[in-house]
Length: 343
Image 1 (cartoon, helix red, strand yellow):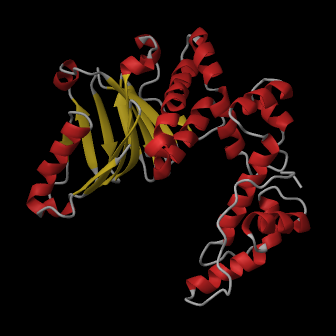
Image 2 (cartoon, rainbow, N blue to C red; image 1 turned 60 degrees about the vertical axis):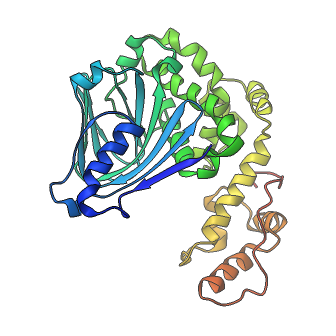
């Protein structure tokens, strides 16, 4: 899978508006795009990637209004469902008599078979996911109940899905090569599970929710990685399953609970210790924030994983940022580290 990038920066100012309208019409969906009257204010950066049947668009652009008119909706030859994921700022989705306001981390659905309006008064900083309705494979009535509703940013299935989609869109290595083909099916099933779970026809949810249980468990673990009480029992309880069944589901995903949590917590501390400028937090407080109860155990685990102590890692990155030499290069992460995640 490859990513196609397009932007207005290399175009003559007077050509940018028409070029942007044509790109959105030809590459994403036919719409009427209302842009600033001043051509100097028209700008856009667009990146398009296909993950199986799902088209992912990363868009940053000027303030705009998007209209899917009745004429365009009626002429739709391939009906698709869109998901808007707000990255920063605020936007609105209007369809089917509803008006959803999106803040960072929120998602909303809209259906190209019916008119809609998208408002980007503060500019566009969004991820858009385009899915053919034939691949959703759920009744139209279920899809229709979900359009133009603000979802996500909480602990529900829609919240976990928003988190998953945000990571998918923000990790280019996940949407290229073999990774994209592996993620296409679980991504689609997770989207189906949101529609099924949010509908007033709960019987629809059984299949998608069961098929996406593994993905939802991992996203829950990721979202609660810093919780000191994260444990197999707490994760199982949150998903209304037994601990034994939790282990069975994770085994199917080739995941060991303790190793996964410990490795991802170590990676989180590594990223914090690599920041420049460094935070005022001590190494011990960073370790505690990510669930390590013992500073000595954390130090040993970090050195086993990355080859140097946490303090040396931080010092090396400070010196590197200042143009100095750390005396020892930062080792590549070793995702195979194992141990007690709560120590």
